[in-house]
Length: 148
Image (cartoon, rainbow, N blue to C red; front, top):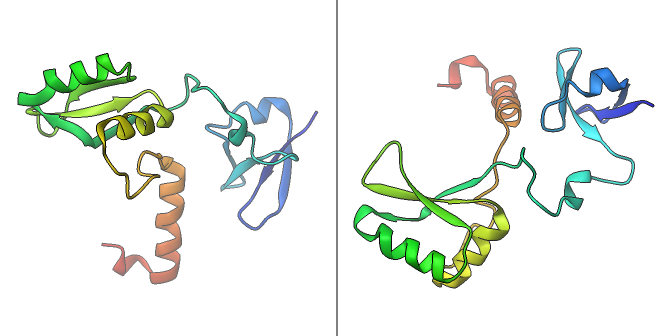
């Protein structure tokens, strides 16, 4: 069986099982270019229902609180059966970030607290590869001198 990956140009590249297993988070470097795993039936990630061990947790400063309020916020989360924990922010230890197991848990918590999320995709992570790819596109368009 062969596994398909798509280049930015749209070209589909097929690889064997051993090569496919080298992919990280659906990305594989082929001939110096990062390619995304391609599934004939669409994007397989859309069918993911439960978080897997590779699903990153959502860390939210916006849903966090100061140290003086953390016990009240933990009690509210416990009473509402919310899947959130409050951990000290590494950059500011007197502030506690909210850490959610999933985006669904974050959305449930936001509704329960009466918050309004004006940026509903704020908990989504950008992979290091996507970030590097974006940087490279800017460098290609504007050149090295403007990168700083």
